[in-house]
Every structure is written in structure tokens, then in C-alpha cells.
Image (cartoon, rainbow, N blue to C red; front, top):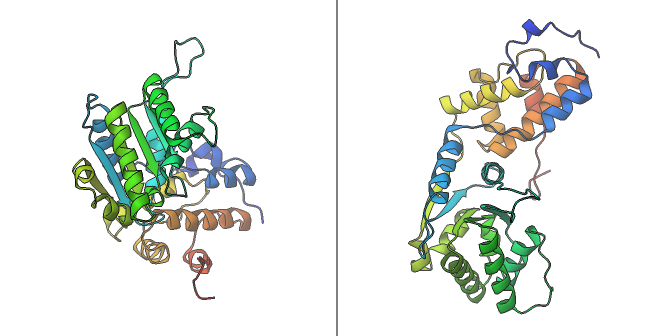
Length: 298
């Protein structure tokens, strides 16, 4: 089904940067819908400000740290990636050395001290011997981080790193303390409440961490404002009224107030609206989208 291309002044429901995209062909618009967008909602901005304060802290043997805690699919990784992009440092071939003030790491799936050092070096494309002893890798990581001026190590999904037995947990916690003390870097973790419980077992380390919560969204004004922002960035040629009470309530019920599930719903519905020619997201579209996770009933 085809839809007449509207005049630019008929796209006032869209952000000015999105209006030209709404005039493009279907595949270009679907590609835009599937692209990751940074939405600077209030809590995300507050967390990034707190991280900026930590990053500006003078180097010391006792650096402030932070643990961002939230449910699965609620935008923790998006905040981590956006903050890291804002602080990419320099990679100028003419510069004396490369600088990486903020290093974002994927927490190793195995909760082992050696995996922490390997992940740091792998992320920096720094060669290492896979069977090198822990002490050698630790020294290499400390030297490398000092050389590139790293001030903050961010671990996404940090609960994976702390999910082992008591001995493994203690080794990983000691490794984080050692990096913080020796290199003078701040440690920032993004994870579930499980990470908070494990950190609380080490009183010395727990006293250095501030917990910043990223709660599930409630169906309130902030939720509707978020939906209105999303609508302005979806290149659909007709308004969908996502912030209207009935639509907002249905989206909240279907997503559980989780940002990741909301984005999934809007991408699916927005793509369908383009391909079917309706050019707007309807209640029926949202109701018909099936989200089934492993273990959910058929």
C-alpha cells in the first residue's frame, strides 16, 4: 500500500531533523526507526551528571565509585554507551599518545580475576598472551591505563562479574579495589540488584560506591512526556498520539514500564505502520504485537 508524500508543513508532529527523513522512501525510514536514539530523559541526565562529577574528581587513592542499578531492559546499557561516547578522548596519530578517559567494558561472563584484565586489554586492542599469569596481566593493565590517561572504568552488566562463588567474588572485588587504588581510576558498574548485594559484602568497597537507581517507569506524566519525545523521532507521516491516555496506558502495560520493551514495541509498530501504509501507530497494532521471552507460556 502506498501513501502520498505530505508537504513538509504537514509534518509538524515530528522533530525538525526527522521531517526530511519522513519524506524518504520506506526502507530509509524503517532504517531510522531501527537505529538507536539517545533520549535525554530526566533520570538519565541526572545519572550522567553524577558520573561527570566523578570523572572530574582529582586522582586519589580513594576514588568515588558508582553502581547504577536497574531491572533488565531498562536503559542501563544505553546510558553507559552514551556516556562513554561523550568521553571518547583523542585518537590523533599526531598526538604524543592516545587518551581514553572513560573505558567501557563488557563484564566477562566468567567471574574470574584474570578475565577482568583480559577484557581491559582486549577492549583496548592491546596484545597479550592468553595464558599469561594473573600478576603479569595485572601489571600490563595498570601500566596501559596509566599511559592512556584512563580515569574511569565502566563495567556493563557487572552482576555477571560478581556471580561466582564466595572465593571468586572476593578475588574480583579485590581486583576492582586494586585497580582503583593503584591506577587512581573510578569504578562504575551497571547491573541488577544482585551486584548491589555482592558489593555490600565488602564493607571497605561498599563505602566507596554510591548506588544510583534506575527505576521502572510509572504510568505518570514523565511516561507520557517520554512517549511524546519518541513520537517526534519516529519518521511516520501522521501523528500517532502516543502520549494520549489510552495509548500511553496500553504501552505501559505491554512494556511493563521497561524502556527496552517500549523501544521494541515502537520499532515493531512503527515498521508495520510504514509497510502497511497507515503511517501512524494504532492501539490495534500495539495489542497485536507479541512479546514472548524464554520460559513464557505459549
